Length: 101
Image (tube, rainbow, N blue to C red; front, top):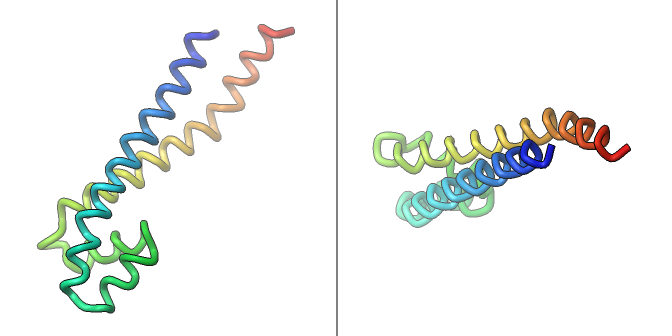
């Protein structure tokens, strides 16, 4: 059971690490660029860290499709990690508690 728990934790950690890295790269790719498009673009990008950059890249997709894809992939990976954690976590704990008794 130790191997399955280790694999479970490793998958969650890798998904969160890669997702957070993609979010940071996408955010740092859009934030400086949003300043050139005026205050109506940089205010949401600066103060809404995930939604703002996604909104900015959606509005300027022809110029910022790569950071937009990075942001979307990062959000997707983190959501998958959360889904696995909440759906698979109780199952793993139930299997581990059988070995403890």
